[in-house]
Image (tube, rainbow, N blue to C red; front, side):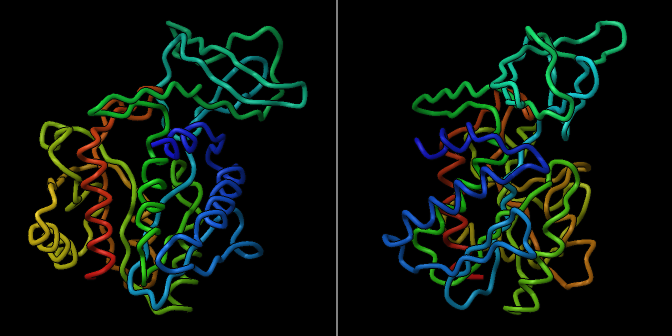
Length: 304
C-alpha cells in the first residue's frame, strides 16, 4: 500500500488541493496504459483544481474528495481550524511559507481552548499547516493522518484499473462544506446524462459499525438518500457476498450533500470503510474493510 502512504503525505488542505490534483494527474498518465480502459481526462479551465476520469459509456460516477482538514495561521501565533480537526497539545504540524519549511507543535490554552503553535519564528499569516504524517501498517490495520479521504481516493484508483464504463470525479473543499461537486455534477449530468453517484469517503467506527466487519453502506447521516437506490446497492453486496454493514446515523455529511440539495435528480449513496480516531493524526482502518470497499465499488460500477 505504498501508494496510500504517498497520498497521506501530500499537502492538500481544503482550498489548496493543487498538489494532490497534480499528483493524481501524473499518476494516471503514468499508469493508464496498463488499465483495462484508458480514460478521458477532464480538468483545467472551468474545473479549478478538480480532476475527472471518464471511462467508456458512463452510467455511474464515483466522487472522492482530495482535500484534508488542517489549520491556518492567523495573526501572531494563533491557529484556526480548517474543517474539524482534533487538536491536542503536542501534535506535530508541518507546512511551508516564504521563509522555508515548517515543523511546529500545537499549543492549547487550557482556560480558553484557543490554539496556537510553538516554533522558533513567527509563521506568515495565511500559511496552512497539516498533521505530520506518521504512517503505520500492520498485518490487519493501517494508521495515519488523512486516511479521510486519501483512502477514498486510493479506492477510486484501484477501481480505475479495471473500470470499463464510469466516471471518477476528484473534488475539492469537502471538509469545509463543499464547493466543487455542484458544478462537477452539473457538467456530468449535462454531458453524459449520469444521475447515479457513489461517495468514496471514510466513515466512523460506532457502536453499530465495527472495524473489521465490512464496508459501511449508509442509509442516512444528516441526510437521507433515496431508499430504493440504497436497497439496490445492499442487494448487490449481498449477492456478491461482500462483507458490509448498514450504517444509520443522525449527523455527518459528505459530497452527497451537494448532490442532494441540487436541482438534478441524483441517486447517491455513501459507501466507505469505517475508521477510528477520526480527524486526528492517528486515523485507524482495518484492512478487511478496505478490501471490502474496493470489491464492492468494482461490482457496483459493473452492475448499477
